[in-house]
Length: 43
Image (cartoon, one colour):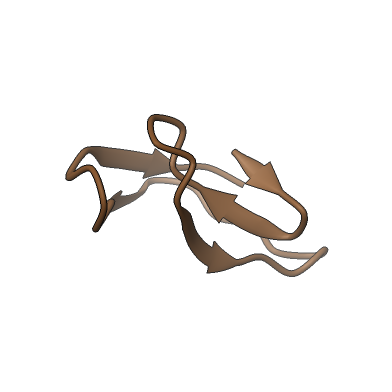
């Protein structure tokens, strides 16, 4: 979930990292520091 150039946790809406306009990513998993859920990142 990208909001205002930031990839955010879909569960708690915490900003996780900045995303460039031309970025692409598939198959990356990241754990949210705030809620602890593991997120599959796809850009």
